[in-house]
Image (cartoon, rainbow, N blue to C red; front, side, top):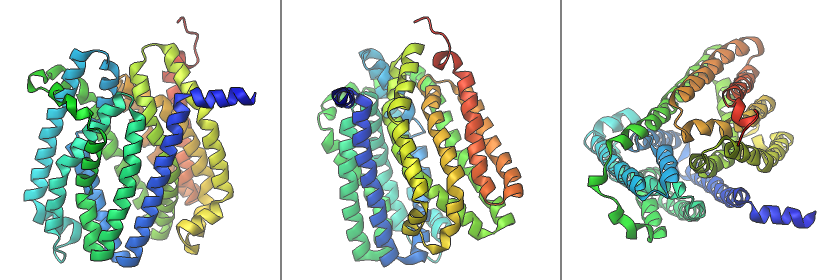
Amino acid sequence: MKQKLISFFKGNHLVKIASLNSVAIIIKVLAGFITSKFIAIFVGPSGLALVGNLRDFMTSTQAFSTLGLYNGIIKYVAEFKDDVKELRKTISTTFYLFLLSSMAVAAYCFFKAKYINDALFTPQHNYVHIIRTLAVAIPFYTMKTYVFSILNGLSKQKKLLYITIFSHIIGVVINGILIWKFQLEGALIYIAAVEIVLCLITFLGVSKFWKGVNFISFKKVSFSSIKNLSAFSIMALFSATVLPMVSVLIRNHIIDNLGEASAGYWVAMGRISNYYLMFISSLVTLYILPRFASIHTNLEFRKEVWNFYKTIVPIFCMGLVIIYLLRNLIVKVIFTEEFVVVEELFFWQLMGDFLKVLSMVVSYQFLAKKMLWRYMLSEIFSVALLYFASIYLISVYGLKGVVMAHFVDYLLYYILLLAIFYKPLLGKLSE
């Protein structure tokens, strides 16, 4: 029995990737914690607000500079990796799309730096040079993302994770030095310019990849590829706009009815949730999406889903139980005694997150098989349900209602997914 268990873990590619991915995420969380401490010590609360504004702006610019095509590239590279002609079309088309979009976004940021500065930092703070530095870094971020998406599609996850781990270590060292030397401006410079360093690390890590750069040709740009990829752009940009908007509406409702402190408790619970979900979401993107894109039968789809459920979900469940039992300590370590109310939100948040993970695995089939309308309708159903359930349950149960709504949302969303994918997952298959 012991030998069988050892053989299972040695031979299971998903387990190997999950283990290395966990190391990468742990290092990322530790790097974030160290950076937060540096900012708290050398920058202070007011500076932290400016850092947050720049990070949010950078996230938006990065989304538009890549046109939301990351998952689309993974899907088509995985699908065409044995078809040189189609693969070359995909790689060439996306290269030039990324080049044009990143240059357009970079140019806007560079020439509108004063306007952006006033919107982010108010006219009293002059960080125009920071915005222009960020503009210069945007094409580097886009090229790094381009390389990552191709390597992910080619199932080179180990290479990606090694680069990611090394990047986090180098990043936290550079960030610490900049904050120590230049305080707030150092933190802002790091956020603006770090992608240049990370891009160079990526290029060095995949030097063999660039030997095939002549694989990219403007003559191979395909309008059919653009049409195929447009669905992924729509899906990604939809999620990047609608979901945050609904969160803002719910947060404002909590502020209006329960006060700013209650909204802060919900945000705190969300931050804790994001930390442990990072392990699963990154693994799903890294392994499940390219795997789903490369399979073509319902039987293979079923096997992959149930393999994930049997291999990863039990470990995740154990983690959720431990988190619930240690919720008091977790709140005190990450926050302060003032956030003790957050402990009351853990049960429903964890229950909802369990269903979220079950749903996440299945829903990636929408992306892998470019099921645009099913994706859009199911997402609209989910966000609408979350909003209206939150409004109703908050009025009945107070702040706890918002995490209860989170649970209800993913319960019904998972049922919807099981209905959509009933035959592949639960029905009788002829393969």
